Length: 163
Image 1 (cartoon, rainbow, N blue to C red):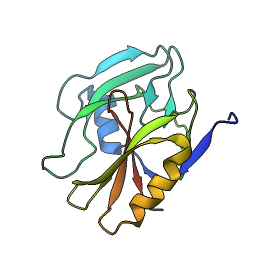
Image 2 (cartoon, rainbow, N blue to C red; image 1 turned 180 degrees about the vertical axis):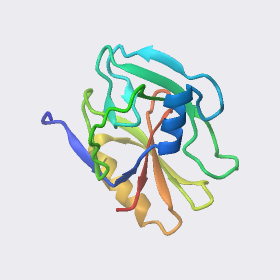
Image 3 (cartoon, rainbow, N blue to C red; image 1 turned 45 degrees about the vertical axis):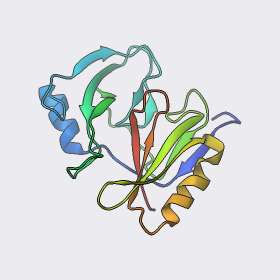
Image 4 (cartoon, one colour; image 1 turned 135 degrees about the vertical axis):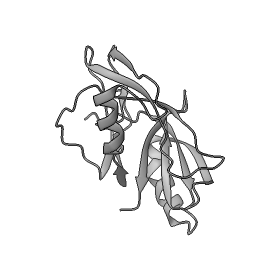
């Protein structure tokens, strides 16, 4: 950890086991499409283990939806996961943020969603301000969960639930 690193503290929901099992066994993603098998150049965000890939690691690039309900906000987007189960221990109570080596780097978007899976608030945040935004969004009575997104491509990074 560098001096710029911080931790975003909230319960990080795992990517569904059923999705990972099916993807790794059949190569089919959440839309029934063939996932793309790639060798990491290094730095790809591995959604299943909440870390950046090391150069040469075998990854699957697959379509995934973090939503369970149908509606206008349900979307599918790309996620990288390890091609094979790694057995790594993943801290789901905090995500390291703030530097190029961290899963979440210096800036990202946070969206608050209702029980109906509709956006109720959103912010583009710097890592140093992220915990305050998480706490503010979870203080709202209409917030059921949060999504964190990578700012450049808008890809899904993780779901945060109240601790």
